[in-house]
Image (tube, rainbow, N blue to C red; front, side, top):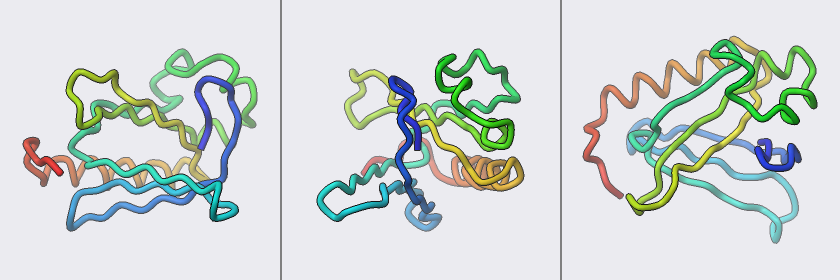
Amino acid sequence: RLSGRTGTRTRAEYHVDADLGWFVLKTVGAAKSQKMMVFPVTSIEDIYTVDDGEDCFPKHVIKSLTSQEKAGLFLIVHTADDQNAEPTELFLIEDSKSARNYLLQHLQDLVRSKPSTTKV
C-alpha cells in the first residue's frame, strides 16, 4: 500500500470476499499499528493503472517506483457510505502486472454480478 500524499509504503494484505462482495485490506505489522479498510466492491468508481497513463498518479509516487513496481501499480477510487464524502483513493502495488490484471478482472466480474444498490 502506498500513501498518495507522501509516497510512504506500508506492507498490506488484501482479499476479496466474493460471496459478500467486499474488498478487505489489512496492514501488516504489530497488532497495535494494524489498520483495516473494508468496502463493498460496488462502491468502486474507477481503477487506474500505469497503462492509463502515469499522469493518473502523483509524480512523487511514480518516481519512487522501479519499473516492475510500476507495472503492478494500481489506484482504486471508491466512495464511502456517506454519499457527501469525497471518494477515497487506495494506491496498491501487486507483485506483477499479471497478478494486478487478475485482481482487476476479478473485481470487474464481481461488480457486474452484484447489484449496484448493495448497501452494508
